[in-house]
Image (tube, rainbow, N blue to C red; front, side):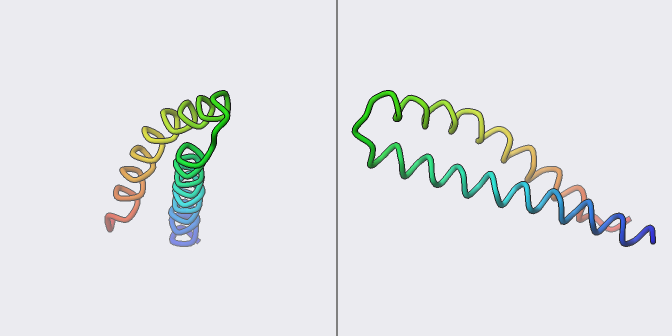
Length: 68
């Protein structure tokens, strides 16, 4: 049961990481293709928020994958 709990934690971190990476790529694409300046600013702000979150999730994932 303890092993299952540890795996669930890893899966949750990975899913969150994957979702935020997808959101980041979507915002970068929007930034390149959008003509509306307000939308571009929203995408820039979202990118600024997502990048540190992704870095933190990547570190969390690395730590969670270390055998105990």
